[in-house]
Amino acid sequence: MLIYNVFGRYLGVKHTSEGWQVFRADMSERKFSRLYDIIIPDDLTEHEIPGWLGDIFHESASEKHPDVICVE
Image (tube, rainbow, N blue to C red):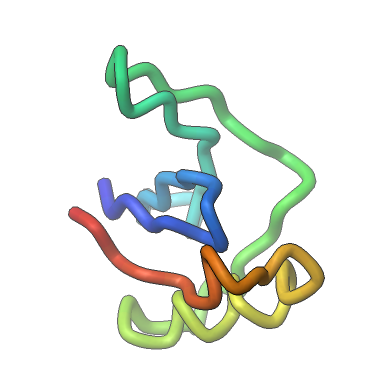
């Protein structure tokens, strides 16, 4: 699973036979909860995901958390 810091919020992204799946990530306990309302198109590559997440959540950007960063 890929873990992203999306403007201060941790999200996990996993590619399965059903396409990309998105999870809320609790990094302190390593627990993941599936999020069904965030869709990543199946044809996106791993390298395109940060840009996609940035487009979706750009309103959450702040001086403290200005970017989407892959942390794992």
